[in-house]
Amino acid sequence: MGKNESNSSGWRSNKWIRAAIPALLLHCSIGTVYCWSIFSQEIADYIGFSKGATEWAFSFAIFFLGMSAAFLGNVVEKDIHKSSLIATICFSVGMALTGFFIYYGGQHTGSIVSLVGIYLSYGFIMGVGLGTGYLSPVKTLMLWFQDRKGLATGLAVAGFGAAKAIASPIMQSMLENLGEGGIYKMFWILAGVYFCMMFVGHLLLKKPDGWHEPSGKEDKPSIMSVLKTKPMTNYIGIWLMFYINITCGLALISQEKMIVKCIGLAASAGIISTVSAIFNAGGRLGFSAWADTMKDRNTIYKLIFILSIAFTALVMLTQGIKTGEGNIGLVILVLALIFIVNAGYGGGFSNVPTLLSDHYGMSSISAIHGITLSAWAFAGLTGNQVATYIVNHSGEWIEHGTDAAGNVIKVNPVGYQNVLFFTIALYIIALILCLVLVRPTDKALEAKAAKKASKEA
Image: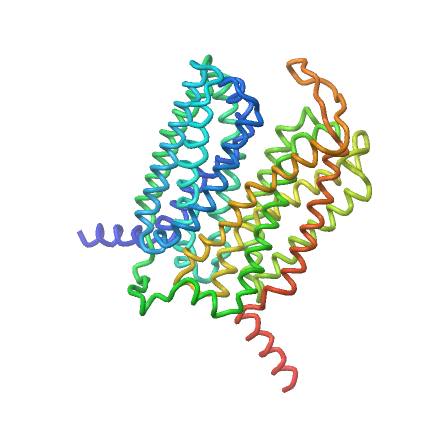
C-alpha cells in the first residue's frame, strides 16, 4: 500500500505529467486552427460562396482568440480546471458545429445561414476555446519549471505551431478518402478526437502543491496597479512590438503559398509549407530556450527584428520574389526569408509570457498575458487583410503555368514584392520600440550593476 501511495504521489507531482504533457495535448489540438488554408477552398466550393467570404471565419477565430484571452484571463488565473474545460467544450463543439453548417450549406447551396453559422462556430465559439486553451497551461508550466521558464512555455507553444505540420497531411488524406461530403465528415471526426485529447489534458493539468493563488483584493492587486509598477510605456512597448511581429508574420505567411509558386516551386509547395511550420515551432522552442540563458529576455526580440529586417531588405534589394525563378541563389534567399519570419513569428509568441513575468512577476501573469494577447486579435484582422489589399491593388496578375487539375495559375510577383515594403517598415518601428520603450528587467539591471561593481573593484 505504501508503495502504491508513493507511486501515486510521484505522478501527481511530476512536472511532465501535470504540466508539459497536458499543455501539449491542449496546444496541439487548438493549434490546428492554422490548418485553415488546407480546407478553406473546399468549404467555399461546397457551400457555394467565394473563398474571400469564407476567409473571414479564420480572421474571426484569431480575433476572438485574442479577445477571449483578454477578457477571460482572470478566469484562467483563478481556476485552470474551469478554463481548460471551457476550452475543451468550446473548441470541440465549435468544430462539430462548423461541420454541421458546412453540411447545411451543401444541402442549401448559397444559403447565408451556412456562412453565418460557420462564422459563429469556427470564428466565435472555437475562438473562445482557442483563447482559454492557449492561456490555461502557460502559468502552470512556468510554476513547474521555475529555472527554465522559457523552455517550458516554448515547448507548449511549439505544440501550437507544430500542430499544423502534424495535422495538415492527416486532414488532406481525410479530404481525399472520405468521399462525398468529406469536408463536413472530417470536422465531425476531428471534433471527437480533439475533445478526447483536450479532456485528458484538462484532467491532468495541475499547479504545483506549493503554489497558492493570492485571494482577496488586499492580497491580489489589480492588473493596472501591477502594470504601473513599471512605466506604462514599458507595457505599451511590449504590446506594440508583439502586435507588429504577428502582423508582419501573418502578412507574409498568408502569401507564402503564392510566393513559392512565383519562384518556380509550385510542385514543392506542400513540403515547403511543412518545413515553414517546423521553423515556426522550432522558433517557439529555440528562441524561448535561448532566452533562458540571457540576462534580459528582451534581447531575443531585438534579434528577431534585426534578422527579419536583414532578410526582408535582401529580398527587396534583389527583387527575389519577382526575378527569383530559375536563380538558385535568389530562390534560397526567398525561402530563407519565409523560414526566418516563421521562426521569429513563433519566437515572439513563446517569449511574451516569460518576458511579462520577468517584468511584472507571477501573481497575475495569466491575466496580463491574456490582455497582451489582444494584440493577436487585432493583428489577425490586419496582417493578412492588409497584405491581400496590397497584392490586389498593386502589380499585375500574370499566368504562371497550370495546377494538377489543369487550371491556369495566376500570380502577382510585384504585388507580393510590395508586401515587403509594408513589413520592413513595421519591423523597423518594432525594433525602435524594443530599444527605446521596453526597459531592462530587474535581473538585467542587477547583473549590470554587479558587472560595474566588479570592474571598479
